[in-house]
Length: 277
Image 1 (cartoon, rainbow, N blue to C red):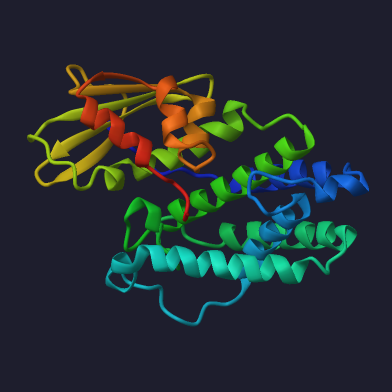
Image 2 (cartoon, one colour):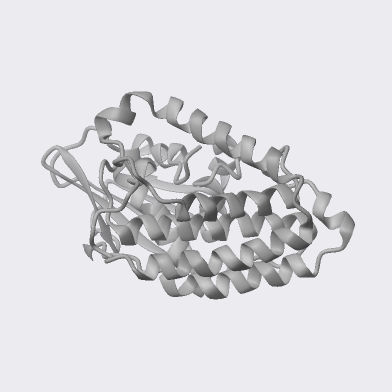
């Protein structure tokens, strides 16, 4: 095993944008109204949400990032605030034509890429990755989080219109690697003896293995599998990204997850969510 390392995703933004724009330009008029798993949002609504994310990132931030004490006691309130803002933007964006929506996405995707390239990877980000339990995050982690958001919503659009998903390792491996950074936070109140290891194995070309190790009063994340782990959790890559983004209910996912060892340790992974939701 070795400690997890930074995930550098910036150069994936332009090709991911081209994939999205290609799909949107191929849509028939009726496709824009197709329902998605992000109910009640349609394909057009999800595309508008992606545009709103770009604009939010590019708008200058003048206020300091909230500290942990500012949001941790009211995490659910923070999620509601984000959801309310997203809903308000999507409702307003329904007045934007599909042609203009594509043009604005192309413009702002390029601007966002340029902005991310200008940021020192290890400097503090303007917004912490709250689902990982961080009160301060490095730019590389915040950018990786944004990559997963863009990848995920593009899959929602693709599924809604019957287009192939982007599941090749180039796309999905960094998504899974980013999502698994939420493991220490998901297990934060799970007590265990010092040195206890919990391994998560994700099968598939884009998968891998990660291990939590109890060190003192914290869980630390490593890449690889521990010998003699108290629990080993195994699932396939398609189930993993859906489970960690609430794309499948835990009780529906559980029969397809294999837990070897401590059952309580294994079941905790079912509650991990690697999105703000």
